[in-house]
Amino acid sequence: MMILKVPGDMDGFSAQIFLQRYIGQMSGVDRLFKEGKVRTLPLGRKLDPRTPLSRGARVLVFTDNSRSIHEQTVEVSYEDEEFIVFNKPQGMPCIGKAEKGINLYYHAVERMKNQGEYDVASLHVPYVCNVLPAFIGGLVIVVKEQFLFEYMLEALRERRIKRVYRVIVTGEPKQSALLHGFMEQGGTFSKAVLQDKMNRNARPAALRYRLIERHGELSLLEVEPMSCYKQQIPLQLAKAGLPMLGDKAFGSSKANHKFGIDRPAIWMYKIVFETGHNNYLEYLNGKEICAETIYMPGFGYFMDQKEPKSVRIEFLNKKQIKQATKLAQNSFMQTIARGEEKSDVLAFRERVKPSMLCRAIEQGEMAIWGCFGPEGMDGMLALADQTRIELLFVKPDCFNKGIGRALLKQAEEYCLQHGKNELIVDTPISAAPFYQKCGFIAQKEIQQDDDIRNIRMIKQC
Image (tube, rainbow, N blue to C red; front, side, top):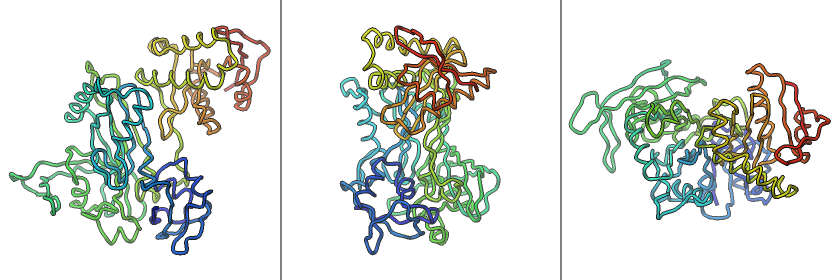
């Protein structure tokens, strides 16, 4: 059982959106409403998912076990065969004991076990690289092998992996600024302090911030710390007259009460790899990984849309191709292969080998995208010669969620950018109705491709 209080930035939101955004995306939200496990206090009446909630209202949620719902949900912002980047919910520790549930390390172990990658004997286990305090949500890098753990730690120490936070503050921030001082860590019962001068117990601390958006008295900042100390960000911002919303140690209790936020409004939302060349992480050089920040306390004040972004689409690199291949093969076996001959299935497996796809990417013959949801890659599309759809697969449990349409829209934009005016696909007849709904027109010819019976369809861009 949980009792949740509606924060100020969710005043007027429906009960369903409140549960999804405040405690994380969760497939069981609809079930909780249907079973009458979401109720209002103090009367305990069943709550309709469309009912708008007012600030300060209390919602009672009956869960199936003692763990908090949001601690059961961890999003995957990036994954390849070497490492995973989780979007950790606020309140969950990365490692160590969790008071109300399980930690992030547990989720990493379970994910590797489910994918057949976990092996203690060969040290093929999760290693958490950047440990975030429980009160900060956001991106956490987890590698899958010990040798890569050393590479990541070195890159983090040398600041070749930049970590960028979003923070909501009160006060009057400049458009951008550099804050610096000397930070002295607090003891067991004392807070950290920031000194103007160096002493034997203090260490240099600096951060940059940039103003993103204003909303009345609140400001949304992008913060990049130049050093990494516990409580550094809220301390330095408070020292500069910019107390963090929801922070109880260095923030403004008056502002926290006024805006109805009782958790720190901070989220590590972006990682930028500046790894350089001639090293093991070179394939990531220039890559940015961003996380959804809709679960950050107070972020609703800066949102124009009521619904959270559901998916993101990005080009795949070599390390993600193996994951895309596995998705395509699993989807093919569950949806198409049942009506095909054994030789057809073997021909398809040969066609989607990671080595074949990587070679096509290197030679500029193919572009491959992945569509990512909260649990990782949900779909993939491969486009050959800027106009021909070679592969389009979606996880069977993600059908009818708009993933296939989103991937086709991405391919259409790419096609137009390269001066092409049509998309072509040779599809199994069973998939033709889907393409027809997306604007493709069937041609008369029935084609034979790799011994698989296909029909050619074309869409004018």
